[in-house]
Amino acid sequence: MHIHILGICGTFMGGIAVLAKQAGHKVTGCDANVYPPMSTQLEAQGIALIEGFAPEQVKLNPDIYVIGNVVSRGNPLMEEILNRGLPYISGPQWLAENVLQGKWVLAVAGTHGKTTTSSMLAWILEYAGLAPGFLIGGVPENFGVSARLPQISPKDSQFNKNQDLGCDTRRKERSSRDSTNAYSEVASTEQRSGAPKDDFCSPFFVIEADEYDTAFFDKRSKFVHYRPRTAVLNNLEFDHADIFEDLGAIEKQFHHLVRTVPQQGLVVANGKEASLQRVIDKGCWTPVEKFGTDADWQSANAHGDGSFDVLYQGKLQGRVAWGLLGEHNRMNALASIAAARHAGVAVDMSIAALTEFKNVKRRMELRGVVNQISVYDDFAHHPTAIETTVAGLRGKVGSARILAVLEPRSNTMKLGVMKSALPASLKEADLVFCYQANLGWDAKEALRPISAKTQVHDDLGQLVEAIVQVAKAGDQVLVMSNGGFGGIHQKLLDALKTVV
Image 1 (cartoon, rainbow, N blue to C red):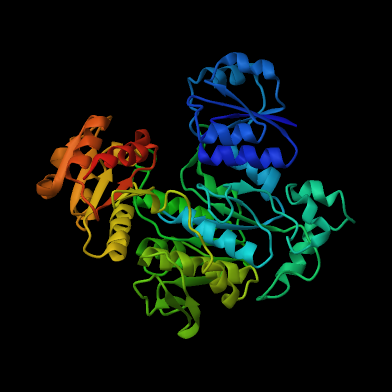
Image 2: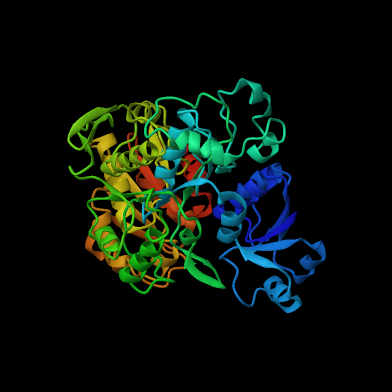
């Protein structure tokens, strides 16, 4: 089948393109901004990309058009598709029908931590030999890719030579045994401490479950399409002010997700979040395990090196020894351990896997050190995430100066809905530099409560120069944005070479 993807350079749609290609489909796509790194990643997969949405693309004559939620009415190619009555489908629905059908889906939802927790969970299953498929909104460093189809167990030496192929291809090379049997084999034991005895095409698929809407013609949240057997509800705050009018509207969508989880499934929920309790109170037909409280999963005895104990119903399960810092990462770990246990992975194996977890690109990623000045990149773009990220770095660097560099770029931030929360979120930073280009509100006024340590700039070059003028050996420069930020990271590393 030939599929043509509109909005292919988004992380989610790019992941769908990779999965479709692995499944043997011909894949082409278009976007308004075709540029690296996504363009080079897709082209490396043999996926042809087209700049823009010219209506002439219908001459490609694909079997179906897969529509990303970046596409709206008035888009010239979409209008041509509608006028001609050509077949189209949303990305989440295509994924549900062509990849997730019949799989044990483990979906990770929440305002924060979806990418990190999904990456932890996928890695735990991989470490346990369960070879899951996944689609994650970032690049987990343990895998080096953001998406792949379920695999044959890597412990099956008979098929090691075919590890680059998806299960659908490899299944043809072996005796017939469908994924339902493999599913039963894996699910038959509540806990296991290793890979299945026999080779199998993994029934597991881990997906980052976004609450953003599906498409211009389907305003339900994406995650409603995924029908998970294991659902992780990491946290829930107000976000996406461009499509949700208030927190209650988001809670309603989360309840729609909960309603799709089967009785024999599991909901893993943050026990500290009143919003999630309200979601569950609306109706839940599935067992619930909570993390962050002493009812079920809890962390204890956290040390400055990041290590902590894992407790389940008050009983010590083991100790995670890793380099990740902060309460948010401990909560992510507890959620992933609980979800993996539901899929059959023993807790001690999950703990062992997390000691080898390498996090995700753009999550407190050290981009370089110049003249003893460190430059970090982080995806934080919501006040809660900003506060958590800065606090995590503070815990790592102690009394060293933190220079927080912020681009309020998300739709919610551009609308100014969260601007009053920004000063408090940056309290742990020693200096703050805000880039306010393309904002619809006055960042200087919003940051007035911390004006003594804050600079606001409209020009990226001037912003870089201002940081370099005050930077000194030992400083930690923390860049926070959910976009490319004009390549500021490398610009800073280059400019910091002049610091003496």
